Image (cartoon, rainbow, N blue to C red; front, side, top):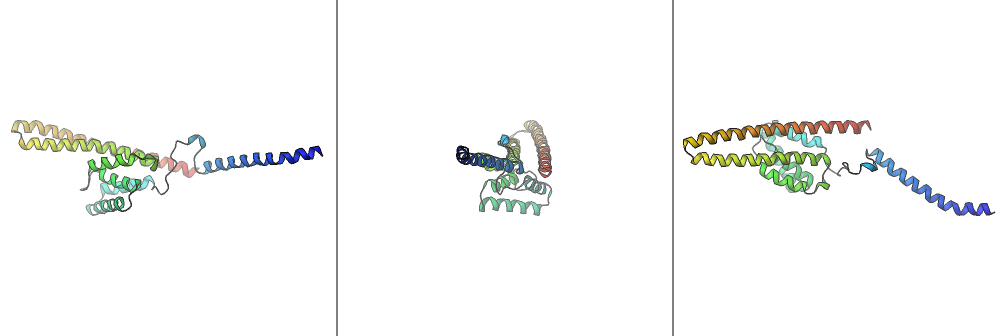
Length: 207
């Protein structure tokens, strides 16, 4: 009788322990199937509704290599999206379009400002979006500085004498060469980011 009484009192305790174990197991299972572990809480947790990084890269490739009509269409769509449905992703998309050189609406100064605003709230972005924004922000800031210097030098050239014009022209050529180098660096950084994204996608598919 005493053993039965002890058993009856132990049952609620055992049930509680089992419930805790089951809840812990569910949490671990959820982390496993989502590709995350509890020890990896600092990783990219994902943002609901955020597009994949491939979406940005494909559009930037089309913008850089497309015909004027396609470039104008991409710019108009990104601009209207940022204005009509403002949010971190739409602002990032428009900022990346502005930061991409090679089309008439490229604006590195405005792009830098928008990218800084987007990065001010990193919790609303995925890790890939943060990396892409940082790459383009650095490039845009350098391009904006270089473009400002180009404009300043052009003003000097308009007022300078022939001897001063020669020296300024050489400086202008050096700055334009630096711009080309920055564009190449940006293209290489985007390729590396795309490669990393492909690796991460392959790992997720394997899991």
